[in-house]
Image (tube, rainbow, N blue to C red; front, side, top):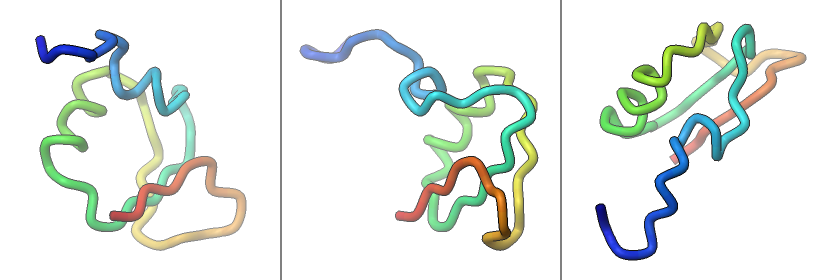
Length: 58
């Protein structure tokens, strides 16, 4: 584990919860995989829409 790393899972840091509507653009595969490994059931949107809960833009 890298020095200074808190050990808190990324999905928790991002406050993700089951059922959230999420749009992402340019998210690195490693980040998407880490979030996916957390086991949350997210609705991944193919474009930004009204009432989305989370957006990640790189």
